[in-house]
Structure formats: structure tokens, C-alpha cells
Image (cartoon, rainbow, N blue to C red):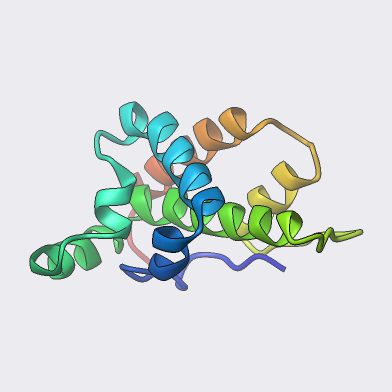
Length: 130
């Protein structure tokens, strides 16, 4: 089960990102695809320097960044579990988590999913609050 918006935090899974080369590779690959779509390197927002943590936390409250960030973390952690041999027979998600589940199930490729998630986050950001 992959969660939706509201679970985002600066430094989520930072230790895994710093110590597992597979997770780092997935996160960095996703950030590279997303950078021109978001206008920011997502790893700078997810894993800020100590002095930038408050700014990163504020940025992660912007739906245009929140949704791609959640997708990337959830996808990278799922890939880690698969690397360990834990392969689900079924996946499900809520909100943005549905996109992670769909991507893992082969509904669309990772680059397609990232483009879709970036567009979704941008469009949701433009809606009135509430």
C-alpha cells in the first residue's frame, strides 16, 4: 500500500539514500528526469543541507513538489524491497500512491510515470485551496 500526500517530510529515507547505492541510483535517476519538469533538483529538496532544512520543508508543502517527491521515495523503497527478494503479488495506493502502484505493476514506464506525476502535481498546485 502506497500512501498519498501528507506523508512528506524533508530527509525522508535519507539514511537509506546515503547508504544504499540502489536507492541512491533510483532517486537520482528520478530526480534527473524530473529536474527540467520541476525547475529544481528534487534531491536538494528531499535531502537539504542542515541550513536549508526549513526552506526544504516549506518547499515540500507545495503540491507541485510534494507529489513527485512522494512518488520517488515510495518507488525507490519498493525497488529496494524487490532487490531484497520481496516481490508483491498485488499493489495498491491512495492518491499519488496509486501512480507508484501502477508503475510497479507495469501500467506505464518510470519516465512516463514521472512526467505524469509532475504534471499532476503542477495542475493540483494551480487549484484553489480547500
